Image (cartoon, rainbow over all chains, first blue to last red):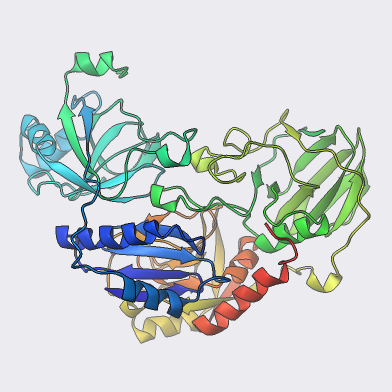
Length: 226
Length: 307
């Protein structure tokens, strides 16, 4: 663990150089420790693949105090059980909503049916949330279907689109510009701005996601629009 | 008690000091772009520090006053009138039922702040009154203000006139200096690249918005194309592949994968927020110790306005 000062009110905790289960586990340990403090001096805790960014109140903390405190309090040997709830997301992987299925098939020389099977056969970790409110960065996508971003991002990716960028996958929680490869769509809502603070999104770093392929009929039944 | 918006301004929104504690869900801080002017406006009315206001980006907002109150105006140099009579900014004004407040075109700077005593009664959404248009959260229906909007506010007696001393009023010069702490990926920029960055003058492009301001000038190259996405803080200086710095401001994305050479001191970001395209920009290195002193001094100077 390395703790770097970033600005007067910000420090970055670095827990590894590469994306791995081991680093993800360390990120969870640091994230849950900092959140358990319920400390008014800590303003933001932003976990990502290999780091946790902490923004603090400079009238309460200084860098050295916080650095020493974190260094002396975190025990990576401690085998903590995290909330590893698996969230199931029904997806209609049809060509009408999976705009880039053919592109992925061509680039990777794999059949569309296989893309669907490979993508939905895995349970993904939520590594980070960002880019848009409730946009989870999930991994790792099997390399057989990993596909680079589009050269030109779309001006509007529809809400609920399920997408791949390299070895990451995600669900667009709202309409947004975006350059990821779209492979299907879900009617599951992932961002509720009018909910209480603790239920704005069902996603949190450490939870897992499983995609469940559904038929066009079921998608329409669930409120999907084609 | 209310104001009515009479035109469709370019980008006027309700802002307070920001929406905090939700960046881990992808929700940005947002808040007033120029915290200095915003805070002075609340100071003039003896409002609490985080009282919401109208942030009038690019000027051009016309308001009809439906009930008597006291307003404070700060920020950019601008033609402002009440009932077609020119008035001064950086002070309070009594406004009466039927008055028309017109914030016209801006001469110097970019953003005007208008506060009322005790703020507007817009919904408090996810910890804040701040509007973030890209997230459609906060303010009036998560959007910029438009013709016909009614902004309610609590009633108050007229307050005595207060003015900010001239020495505190910014001049909005054509060249500004931004103090920078080297941090984040600065090790991935060679000493030669860092020297270039501090030696050359940059120009503010017209690609500016509440997320960030893009500069152009001497190209800066990093040893790396990108990084594994990590959390972003206010003032971060991203160097994308084209080598032209982007300084991330109040509505910055919460995480990102571009290399960052460092962070601009917060109080200098407020200055940058008011800079118009073509403003010349120079960077100067500052230590964390010195930067911390300056940031603390800013926060403490308004400590009489406790949240």
